[in-house]
Image (cartoon, rainbow, N blue to C red; front, side, top):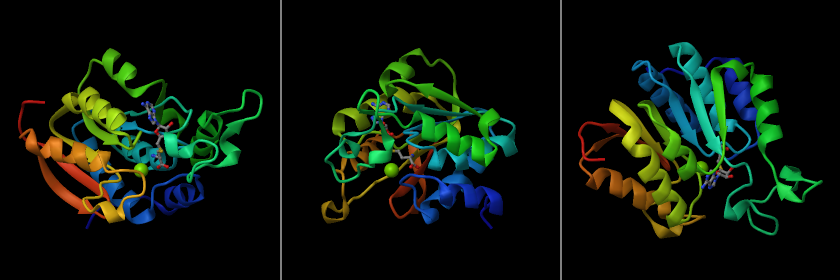
Length: 216
Ligand code: SAH
Ligand code: MG
């Protein structure tokens, strides 16, 4: 049976603000537990308020590794004021821009997982450029434009260790099912076409790929 988080972790996950549905979250957790066996850090692109981070952090704690999570905390295009996925609670009233970092910090604190996570606050391609080491898992859940999704793929996929996992969220092969664009689907295809990754599971819009080759 796939490993599942403890009830208190699931409760913290359900209480957290964010966009990761339970069913896909459980698949992400199972992938993170498997990848944790490599003894390498697990990295997420797209922290938002820390909902999915809870699952990576709990798997990291179990494995004795660190979860890393990257976000500039200013929100994606579709999360800005006036757009469909906007949440007014995420706006910093002093400067009038989104800032999801304080909510993220509360989420992790409440879940008791602060010490298992390193938050990298910045633009994903810029962080990727200064990141040197191999990763057990890369979870891409950041910006949904082609520019952002491609940069996430190009910046982070090369760091996935042999046998490590590349997980992509919001993969919608059918344009009628997508809400924020098909860029995640296109990087998923890129990963498969590269020959470096093989698909291991599909859970709704969550795809888990394993590095089985080189070339990326
Ligand atoms: N994983 C979250 C949802 C992430 S939403 C959950 O489980 O709820 C996408 C996030 O990606 C937003 O917080 C946005 O700020 C971030 N993001 C978008 N483009 C980015 C970029 N280029 N660099 C860093 N973060 C980015
Ligand atoms: Mg998502």
